[in-house]
Length: 106
Length: 122
Image (cartoon, rainbow over all chains, first blue to last red; front, side, top):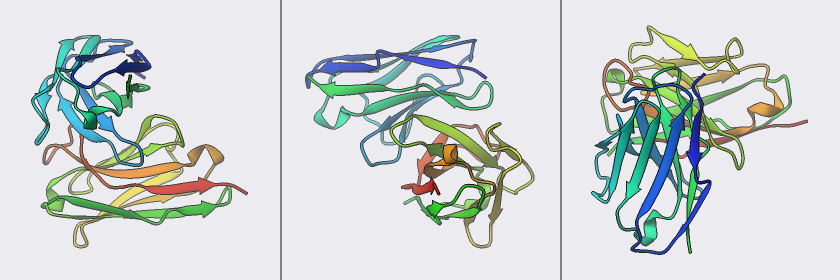
């Protein structure tokens, strides 16, 4: 099983600031990595797939990068609706998710 | 627009069975692989099972293999998850999710349903 480790567990930022979230895989997942956003009481929403492809309807302030074992989700300027939990997920092997990063209002 | 609606959750005793349903609309159902993903209370996400668009292939995560069965009825735009021999650790919100591509699944999860809560408790 490929283990995904997300850091930090919690990110405290203000609206307008840049958010940088990290996801590290226990072995290479090539480019088979996605990012999801989940708000309280809601289902997850796909943001990014194959490292850097933005899903339909996702604002341009969300971007992904990385390869192999180290990946980053960047939110260029936080909007109030972006405060949520973010999960990375790999499909190089049977799908697994990271433990999540909570982006909270500072 | 794409809509996925789960049903069938509830409280069930350990060792008993439950069947979840997920009815889809807004897309050509028989083109897409469908997944179940679960989330224990206050915890992260765990992939459970996938069924290919034509039902020809089904795969399961190790914790549910041999106990859960995924199936689909393309005439009813519905995917099912039959859960047998339920355990306390199966307690979770169960989401159905459509794969992002057709017909062969990518194992990335596009539209999700709102989820249905399954509680396994005596």
